Image (cartoon, rainbow over all chains, first blue to last red; front, side, top):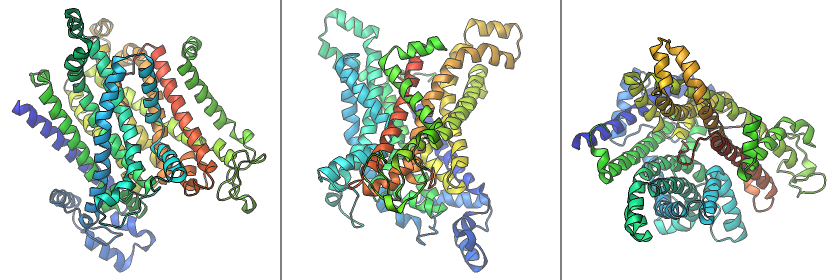
Length: 316
Length: 280
C-alpha cells in the first residue's frame, strides 16, 4: 500500500519534470533567444546586452534549467520582460482570482453532474435520459466563447442582471468579485457538468447490469436501496478519473472564458504575455497550470485507491 | 460504403449529423459561387446595417457583408483541422497499432511517455508553442496533429492489444511472418473502423480548439473571414448589432455538432460503442 502511494507520487513528479523539460526545451529550440524574440527589431546594442544580462542568458542551458526549476520550487519564477517586475509579484493575485473562478465552478458542477448522471443512468433511454444526454452533447460541442456570448446577451444585455465584463479594482475582495463571477462560473460549469454527467451515466449503466445488482433485485431489495447502496458507490470510482480529466478541460476553458469576460486571472495574463512575446511569463504560467493539473490527477488517483480495495492488490 | 451511409441516415441523429456535415462541406467548397459579395471588401457606406434584402445577415463594423463572411468563414478552419485530424489519425493510429502489437517493455515505457503527454493541459502547450513559433496554420496544424495523435494512440493501442491476443494473429506469428506484414495485413484491416471513428471525433474537437484559438487571436489572422475571429471582432457591438455575432456562432456550433453526431452514428453503425469514451 505505501509503495503504491509512493509510485503515484513518483509518476506525478516524473510528469511535472517531463513537462518542465519539454517547456524549457521548446523555448530553447526557437531561433534566437528569449531576448531577441522579445525585442524583435530592437534586438541590438546595449538594450540586447542588458536583457541578456538580466535574464542570465550567457550561462549554459543546463544551468539555466536548473536555476529555473530551483527558483520555481521556491516560488521565484524569474523576471518578466514586458512588465519589468519579478514574475511572482505579478501572478499571485491573478492566481487567486483564477482559483476562485475554477474552484467555484468545480464546487457547483461536480455534485450536480454526479446527481444528473445517476438520474440519467437509472432511467436509461427514457425521456429524462435522452433530454439530459442531448443537453450534455450540446454543452460539450458548443465552444465556450459561444456559450459565454449567448449568456452575456441574455443576462447582461437583455436582462442586465450581471456585468458583461469584469470590472474590479486590483485587490478587490470576494464580495466585490461575486456579481462579476456568476456568468464565467456558469459557462465553465456547463462544460464540466456535461463531461462528468456523461461518464457517471455510463458508469451507472455498467454497474446496473452487473451480477450483484441482479442478485440484490432477486433478493427483493427495494430499488431505492439498490441504487444508493450498491450502484452509486461502485459507479463513483471510474467517474473519479474523469472528474480529474475534466479539470484539464477546466484549465483550458478558463483561458477562453477569462478572455471573454476580461476576467483578471492567470488566463488573461498568459494571453497578454503571448501577445507581448514575454516568454518567461508564459513559461511560468504554463508551468503553474501543469502543476495544478498533475496535482488534481494525483488526488483523484489516491482517492480511487482509497475507495477501491481491488486497486490495492498487486498487479495494478 | 453506401450501406454504411444508409444505416447512418436511418436514425434521426445520424441523418442530422450527416446532413449538417455535408451542408457545411458544400458551403465551404462552393463559397465563391454562393457569396454575393467579396468577404473582405470594406465599404464605408454600409457600416453596421441591419439584415435587409441585399445584405441578408447585415453588415459588420467595416461594412463587410456578414452573409458572405459566414459562407467563407468555415474554409480555413475546416482545411486546417481536417489536415490536422488526418495527421493525428495516421501517426497516432500507426504508433498505437505498433505498440499494441509489440507489447512488452517497449510498450510499457512508451505508455509512460504517452501518459505524461496526456497529463498536461495541451491548450497551454499550444499557446506556448504559438508564443514561440508565431500564430498561423503552419504552427497550429502540426501541434494539433501531434497532441490529438497522442490521444488516438492511447485508444488504438488498447484495441490493438486485444486484437493481438486473437488466434489469427498468433497463427501469423507462428507462420513466421515479419512484423510489418502482421501490422499491415492482420492488425490494420481489423482496426480501420476504430481509426475512422476516432479520426472523425478528433476532427470535431479540433474544430472546437481551432475556433477557440481564432477567438483568442492566435488562429486565423484578419482580414481572413473566420467564424471564431468574427465573433471576437464583432463581440463589442453585441448589444447594437447582434447579427455579426449570432450567425458565425450558429454556423460554427452546427458544424461541430454535425461532425460529432456523424462520428457517433458511424461508430454505432460499425458496432463500436463510444458511450464511455472520454473526449481527450
